[in-house]
Image 1 (cartoon, rainbow, N blue to C red):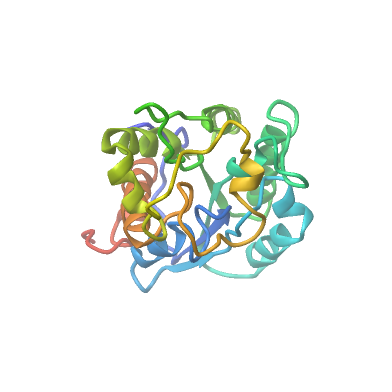
Image 2: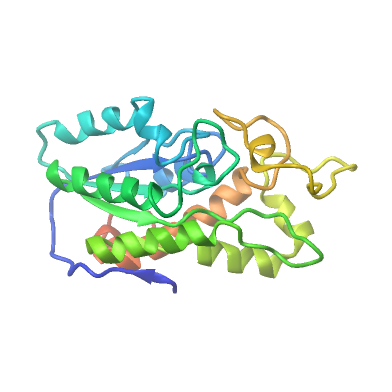
Length: 252
């Protein structure tokens, strides 16, 4: 399993609060986040604050991060863990959202890590969920540079990281295009074709919630079930304490 957990796990008996922060592939109605929350026992508080079309820069700029910080500053006896995934909208071609891979994206992630720690909470980074458009029978991974940047930040800051990009890409690549298309929000129309050379990421992924139409980035019920299960398995690996009776089906 491609996951990393450099911080020793210390037994923590406090109630757990999970906060999801990310883009549309994690957000309600278009991502795996709600399905992930449903995998925790009712005793666990799980807030999905991921938002469609957001990058590591725009999530803060629009004020969404301040909402997360307000939640973290609240007096509570809970153990609070932020699960953060960015990358899709940090790529070039997203006006008002894209960040520079070398000078902005890793700096943004590192700042989030520092602020979560200052608030007395914990953070686990996730690399971006794979896209699912095959080309000539092969699944490209244009998000890998952002995944690698996330892994470096996690290593430098000594925080756990789940390489969801690597795991999800391997799974989807083994499926092939037809099966991978069953993970989408709606079935593909008969006339669907691969993106042309003139199309851009900006035209494929619009700002805000995902449109109720077929695409190969966002996920429907089946995709959400598969990828949330993948995240849970990796989460238990990097932090066994979370899996100790806090996830449905786990033993206390």
